[in-house]
Length: 117
Image (cartoon, rainbow, N blue to C red; front, side):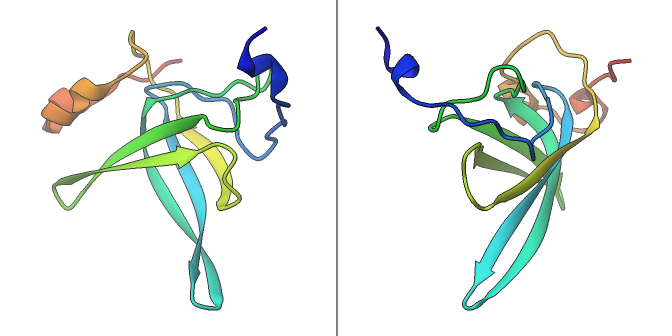
């Protein structure tokens, strides 16, 4: 018996199916004092995936990367965080690896990911 079978998996309806290489928009709830707002973070998924049929475990995360003003910004997002409002796929990417850490060293046209049709 393994630990994964002991933990109850919850379905995450607000998160669409995605895989590494896809461009996603993550809407996060930001709390500033007593005020709350929704902040969108759009970028490429460089690690982690989500399938509706197999819900992630409570400790699972995925990483989204984007380039902002010439600086690469990566954000690690937990699946089961109450601050994740929604995850929407905006573009499907065609890659052959599950972890795209090599994108950190690429810039310009070399860093592009082909679109899956």
